[in-house]
Image (cartoon, rainbow, N blue to C red; front, top):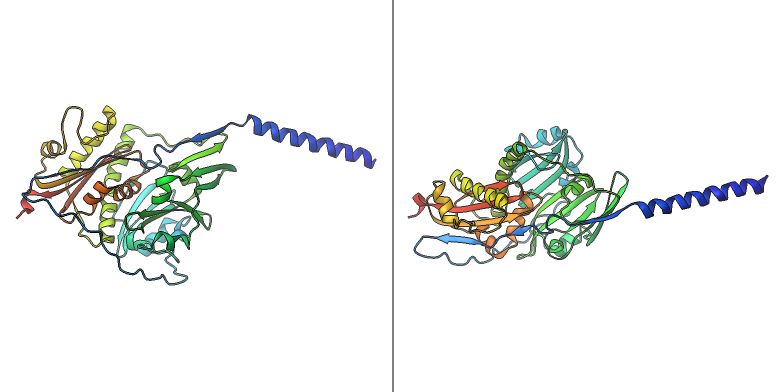
Length: 368
C-alpha cells in the first residue's frame, strides 16, 4: 500500500515538473526599450537682439545641507497609497490639476518648501514628485550629493518589479543611471533626479510598481506580455497637453527656486509659439529648431505676437512626462543655460503628445 502511494506521488511530482518546464518553454520572453532611455534633447537655440551678450553663468554654490530630523512625519514616500483627501486636509487645494498621459490625474502644489506634484487615481495617491526644498523624507534632502543619497537608497542597474504575479526587470544604464537611478523603499519605487553638473539631488519621484510599469522610463525585459498602455483620442490629448505645459512651467520654476533665481512669469504668446513648434515636429516628423519650411524661433515668436530683446528655446521628445523633460534639460549644457539664465523673466511651454518645447524671453517693454 505504501509502495503504491509512493508511486502515485512520484508520478504526480514528475507530471507537475514537466508542466512547469512546458510553461517556461512556450511563454514568450520579451524586451522593450523605453521610447528613448533618456528622451531626446534638441540642440540649444538662443537668439539675442540686445546689444551685449550676457556673460556665461558661473555654477551656483550650494550651502551645507542640514541633516533632516530623524522620524520626520513629513516623509513624502509615505503618502503613496493614501487617500488624496488626507493630503488636501494638510496642504489645501492644489494650484492646478489636470490629466496625465497615464491612468491618473496630476495635482500641483506650490508650498512654502517648493513644488510638489501628486498623481491621483480613483481618489488614491499613486505617485508623489518633489522638487527642491519640498523633498522632505527621513534621510533625504535636496542638495545632497549622490554619495549621500546612496547611503539612504540602494540603486541598481537592474531592478526587478512584480505586477500581477508577473516579473519584469528594468535596466537602468549609462546616462539614465547617472541622472535618474531607481531604488525601492517600503515597497515603493524611487526615482532620484540629479543635477550631474553640481552632483546634487534636485528632484525625487515615488511611485507604485504598477505606475512604474506604465511609465516604462527604462528598457525592460519580461516574460509573457506587457500590459497595454492607455491610448488617447486627439481630444483627450488636447486636455493632457494643456495640463502638461503648465507643469513644464512649474518644474522650471522649481529648479530656479532651488538655485535661488527669480521665478519666470507665464507668457501666452511664447507658449503659443512653443505649441506650434511641438505640433509641427510631431506631425511632420522632424526634430530641430528650424522647421522644414525654414521658420526659426524668432519667426515663430513674431508670428504669435511675442516681442522680445532676448529669447531661448529648448526642445525635447519621448520623455515620460514634463518632470523628466525638465531634468533632462538641466543636465544638457546649452539647455541648462536657458533654464538657469538670470536675464530671462518670462516663459511659455507647448506640448504636443510627447514633444516638448519651451521658450524663454525678455519682453521688449522690460528692456531698459
